[in-house]
Image (cartoon, rainbow, N blue to C red; front, side, top):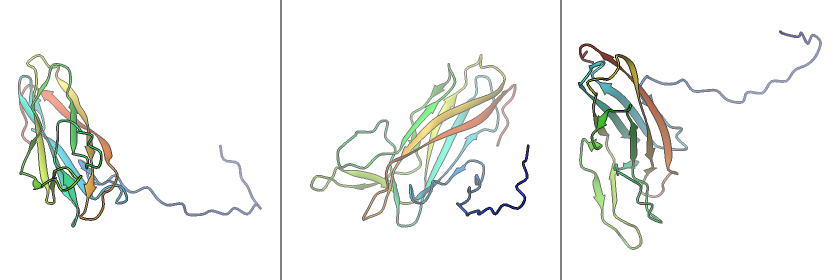
Length: 178
């Protein structure tokens, strides 16, 4: 219900705007938080019971920035930078592989109190293979997970960040490419 306010002066002040969601499968953190663009998808577009799927996540660091290599867990080293962490939560009964990178990271040897650093200055794609159980129910299934990451340049680092992801994967009687 609207209540008219005729005769009253109202002052409005622009407070900003919400940026669009971007392209499907793309995540662009606020530039004050991270200097990277993530894209992701699942292959194939639909999978059959007992079939295989692949989760694909690509990180493209902004020019002059890098993102750290994936690690199974954060070593939590004081003064160290944070590795990229990819946690996938497949449905019950599904099997998943370890995270695989498309390239070898740049390795900067330990210096003084700083530990060894492993990072990517160019785009890197991480994949996780998923095995669908033969008794998986037909219909849309969701693969969810989290990304933990940090971006740095030669002189500074931004705080570590995290993002949740979710992708739909239809389980059908036959695999559909895409």
